[in-house]
Image (cartoon, rainbow, N blue to C red):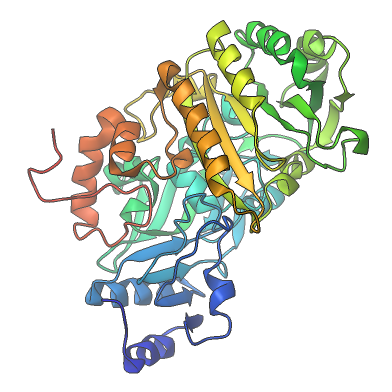
Length: 468
């Protein structure tokens, strides 16, 4: 179906407490935009839901007409999963409430919340959970696919802290899911993406973090990257869980904390978050901070809320983005050489090469406990291509990412689902690996018609298909 009658639109509009936006609405073009300006899709309807009843109404309406559903939380997916062609968008942006239960150390988070909402509410009680490194990222997309962030080595991934959820499934049912009511569905939500319905409430375990952590950046020129990465590798091999680090090779962004003279220069930057005793953190980090002659060193006490907003300006909405990623074991000499070589060819001041240090609490969760993979990986690298909307050389930036990804493939031990892009069904299946058959069985139970397919899709197929 690629069209709806006026009666259809009026019927659902009358049933909603929120707003219904069609192509005839002057708000339509703005409403269908997502973070990645490279995405241009035209849904039939955009429903800005005000409450759970609205979500149930929209899901039922779409199911009756065989219309695919895209769920938009923050709209921050590089693959543009928050918008669809010829279907219905469930826009949760009006559902951003966060309630903290400090006694149980639990955050109740509506499906349209952003990570800044969770951080602000939880830090008021000296609590936090692992969230994204960009505060404007939607909770739902990040949490359902895994959730890597500054606190993951101490607190686990976001999915490791997801203990309950309320979701509307493809038949319009509202399910309350936890380890007792439906442990298999909770397992699938913890890494299986948006395949199983629209999550309207998340329940996250919280940890005592902040309000101040030891954090900041150490920046060196790119021409010493090989030596710096080698030192970093040897130091973090035995790092305590309290240390979270992200390396980034790029042209230095114009951040407020960075002197103007460095803007646009090729650099290797180390982003630090130490969530334990600050004196112990300073002692552990001393070799990295004393290496060479850093261009900038801002490591010191910092409010956790400020850390979570530090790099927001480096990936603004509306630019064009394309990325790939690889999970790998260690920063071997060969990996370091490959990373430095391709980072030196970076095509845009908006592009970046973040390398996330995994391990710690991430690696101690049994592989069968969640649908997230690569528990044994040591690092994840994200080849992050980006360019201005008015540039007509898209293929140059895309090719840099693909060439980089191909060069890293010999070292790959997995892929992070949230960093998939256009790898297609084979790429999704490969990323889930041994969890695939179990995910397909769950998908067949809760969404056999694949109504929720604007995601890294687990196609239910037909019984007997895709099970091998």
